[in-house]
Length: 135
Image (tube, rainbow, N blue to C red; front, side):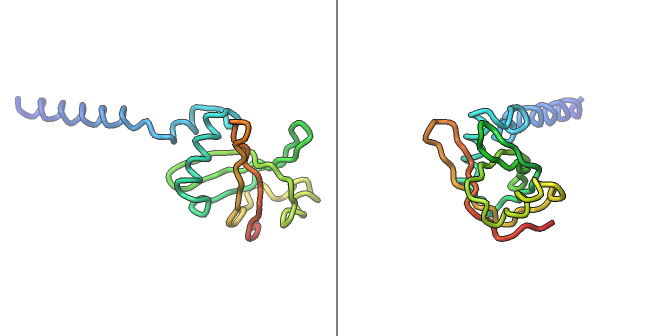
């Protein structure tokens, strides 16, 4: 009789703890990467943890409203996310530009450095620099 009560208590405790874990990681799984909330949470992750604690992998190139972007997959610090990174400066990305990204999908963008423009209230991630591309 004592064991079913203890088992029930353990199951309830596990269930309650899983319900309380509404971490920001859920935002990345439940929202479109272009949404303002998604980008704000991602910017907060970068601010709190620094971009050096994440791995960035190239996933493609895209042009939106006449601006060039690279699609990146982001892992690390317990999250998986994706984002568009605006490219105003092609320094160290010349080969990606030349090939229009062909052959670079999955390549690591080692020590990718970003600026975050939040002037319009909707964060835009902007490429600043990187150490190297590991293909």
